[in-house]
Length: 239
Image (cartoon, helix red, strand yellow):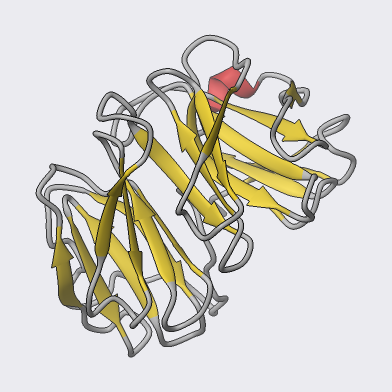
């Protein structure tokens, strides 16, 4: 699940590189120094802007696909077999909960606040919502087109939200992204228009500032919309 990053003048590999497991799935920084990385089935923390990483947690299942933090103390993660994880002490300790059942493969988690959170599931195309800090979860189905794996989710109000999906799984080649929006808290979802010719660019991820303005990224390309996907502009990702 794509999350927050902080700007700098250029991009360089951190030394040591943060790869701790077989694949790096998700990062989330709450400020320029403090962030978390899910790599394989582990979660690691950096307190110096990614210069070094310390492993905090290792799951009993093979992957943790998504991270989301409200602040330096409260965070969430999710993965396959119905697992969602939560911490209230900055990742020192994590609690594990099964949501739904173990056939659920959660690929994206997002919490608006300590009470209201959302889960995107790709095997059955389920969408889960909690309003009591994850004690109970309400399930609905997302009417997605074809293979659609939620990779990014954000809610800008109690009712208005965006999901970006990818047609291929983490680490796979090819694929394309589609955006969906809800205006009733996730009860119903409608697809936004894809950028023209976007299938040629293997769009894999996205980020939205609000319901109108967002970006999709792919093979050497970034698309931007400022009107909820009615129009898209393309910019090369390489100079």
